[in-house]
Length: 543
Ligand SMILES: NC(=O)C1=CN([C@@H]2O[C@H](COP(=O)(O)OP(=O)(O)OC[C@H]3O[C@@H](n4cnc5c(N)ncnc54)[C@H](O)[C@@H]3O)[C@@H](O)[C@H]2O)[C@@H](O)CC1
Ligand SMILES: Nc1ncnc2c1ncn2[C@@H]1O[C@H](COP(=O)(O)OP(=O)(O)O)[C@@H](O)[C@H]1O
Ligand SMILES: [K+]
Image 1 (tube, helix red, strand yellow):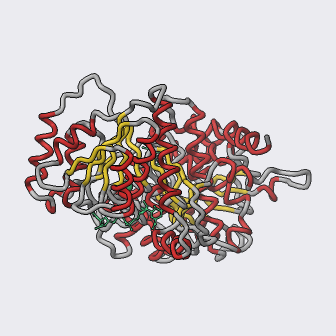
Image 2 (cartoon, protein in one colour):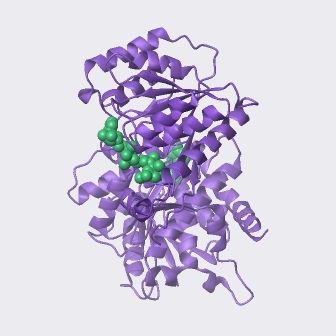
Image 3 (cartoon, helix red, strand yellow):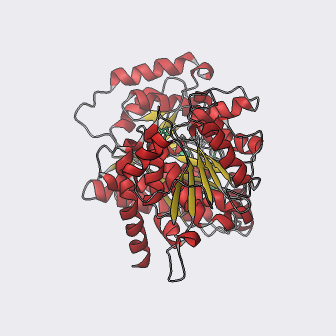
C-alpha cells in the first residue's frame, strides 16, 4: 500500500524535527543523490562522467536538488545547476559551487531556451523548481524553463497557463525548439525532487506546465498528488525516502497493493455455504442491451459469489443462462444489489420493466423492501441506475460513474459542471458527488478514485486496453460479489465500502492485465480472467 499525507500533515511532522535541529534536508538530498546514482548506473554502466542538470527554484526544494548535485559531483558526475530564481537556497548553492559544480543563471528573461537545450542533452535532469511550497501554476522563470524544456523535446504536461505567461516565454520556447537538434539522441531521465514541480500537491491537478518525471523521489511520505489523477500520470515511479517523520495514523489518500486485497479476501472455510459467501442480485440489461447482463453476471460468478440472482425479462434471462448456467432467476434473498448496467437511464416503456426492478432492488438495498433483502444491504449503482437513485443515498451504495456519468449525477444535484472539468479535478468532483448524494463514489478512469466516508483511494492497476465497451459492466459484477461477501461489515461501517470498491478496481485492473498481458482485451475476457487473478493474489500473499 502507498499512503499519502497532505502538505499540512507533512509540514506539521517536519516542524518538531527541524526545531530540534534534525538535518532533514541533508537526509533528503543524500537519499536523492543515491537514487540518481543508481538510475545512472542502470542506464549507462557508470555514473562517473555522466552529466546531470539540476533545475533549482527559490525554495528548499531547490535546496534539496543543489545539495544532491554537490554529492553527485563528489562521485565524479558533471553537474550543472540551472537557477530559475534570483535567489536560491544559499547553503545548497555554496555546497554545489565548492564541490566544483557549474552554475547557469536562467532567471533573467531570455535565458530559458539555452538552458533548456543544455538540459535536454544531459543524462539526468533533476527537477527542483518547487515542491510542496508550490502555489498555483508554475510562473515566471520556472514556467519559462519548463515550457522551453517541452520545446526542446522533453515531455511536459498541463495547460501551460499561457494566459498568465508573458509572451517572451512563448518566444523563448520557440527559440529552444529551433536551437536543439536532438534526433537520434536519447532524452534525459527526469527525476522530480519531492514532487514534479507545479502539480497540485494535495489534489492531483495540473494547474500549469509540468515536466513529466520518470521517477519522483519524495521525502517523508508520498503526497496525495502523486497518487491522484491527472498528476499521477506525470510522476513516473514513486520512490518514498524515509527521513524520520512521524505522520498521523490516517493518510489523506491511499493506493492498495495486491497484498492488501489478498489479505482481506473472503476465502471460504469449511463452515461456509452459498448464503454465507453472499448472494448478488443483478438488475442489468434489456432486450436492446442484453450483453450488459451477461457481462455483469459472468463477472459476479467469476469473482466467487455464493449465488448470482438475475432479475430481468425472459429474453435477457435466456442469454444470461446460456452464458452462465449457475445463475438463478427466481426472486429470493440477496446480500448485495448491482443495479443499472445496460439499463436505460429512465423508464421509457422500452426497458423491459428493468427500471421498475432496479428501483425495487435499490429500495431493498435501503432496507425498505424486506422481502427482497433482509435489512439494508450494499448496492452497486452503475450506468442507467445512476439516473434512478433518489436525491440521497446511504453510504453503502457505491455509485460507479465514469466522468461523463458523474457529470449527469452532479447536474441532477444542481452542479453545472463539464466533463473536462471533472477530468481535470477528479478528486474534487468525486468528493462533491459524495457530499451531495451521501453515496460512496467510485469514479472510473485510468486512475480510479474512490471517495466515501473513509480514506480516499486512488487505484492505477489497469492497462489502458481496459478502456473498452462493457468493461464497466464487468467491474460492477466484480464489486457486487465483493460487497455481498462483506455485506454486514459494509452496512455497519460504510468506510469499508470504499475499501472494497478500491479492491474491486484493483482486481478488475489486474484481471485486464492477466487476460492478455501487453495486448488488447475484451470485456468478457476480463471477467473470465478474474478467477486466475484472485488465485494469483492469494498465492502471492501466502508465499
Ligand atoms: N522543511 C524542510 O527542511 C524540508 C523540506 N524539504 C524540501 O523542501 C520543499 C519545501 O520547501 P519550501 O517550503 O521552501 O517550498 P518550495 O521549495 O517547494 O517552493 C517555495 C518556493 O517556490 C516559489 N513558488 C511557489 N509557487 C510557485 C509557482 N507556482 N511558480 C514558481 N515559483 C513558485 C516560492 O516563491 C518559494 O520561493 C519540499 O518539497 C522538499 O523538497 C525536504 O528537504 C525535507 C525537509
Ligand atoms: N485509459 C485507461 N486505463 C486504464 N483503465 C481504463 C482506461 N480507460 C477506462 N478504463 C477502465 O475501463 C472501465 C470502463 O468502464 P465504462 O466507461 O463504464 O465502460 P462501459 O460503460 O462500456 O462498460 C473502467 O473500469 C475504467 O476505469
Ligand atoms: K520538484
